[in-house]
Amino acid sequence: MKRSLKEIVINERGFSLIEVLATLILLAFSLSSLFYFIQQNFVVIERNKIQEQAIFVREDIKEWMTYRAQAQDIISLNPIISQVNVKTFLQPAYIERMNHLILDETGIQRDSETGRALYEEVERDSLEGGRGQIVSKVIYDLSDDSLPKILRSDPYNKFYIGEYINSEKSRSGILVKIKIKSKEDIDDYIPQVDGVDVSIIIYSKKTGELLTETWLHWVGVD
Image (tube, rainbow, N blue to C red; front, side, top):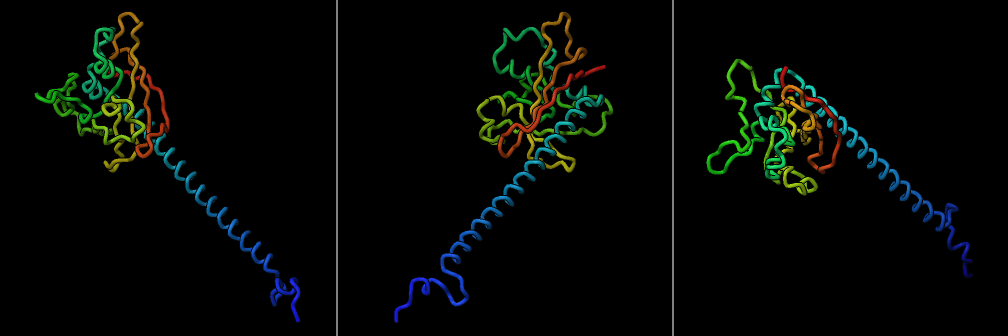
């Protein structure tokens, strides 16, 4: 005797094949959704961790620059900031140098033949006086290889973006750029005395993404 269609699709425990298939599909969908939410949770956690690290670096650089003992070091590495109201007569590379601060000797651009600093930077270990241990916060590479692709579009970034060095003196994966703006419209303006407006810009080394930025009116000498 032939079995009916209803009898064929119902198993011994009373569940139809359609119900079983629907349950499996629902389970697969639920597991997929759970995996997605877990993955997104990890992304958010990692993003927050990087953001917190970037803010710490930003504030550490800011505090370090305002620490008076570092002021002369930074000025010696950036004597070009004293040259105001002359940009009209300069080459673009020279103007870019005037628009940035470097914070370490590794950022000194040198003549390929003589090895001398192109922009009259003075290395900190050559300064006289008992200054104690030199503290490096940012290490520069001066090559495109050290930057993510998105930051290579500006040919000057390789000279002025360095990597933050943490307290263990190891690389952090956080990039730092210091841009300055002199007050050229003020008569008798002396940048070392009157100060310069500084932007401390923080990027991710992995993605090149802008993570955070802060502003500082930096005065190099008392």
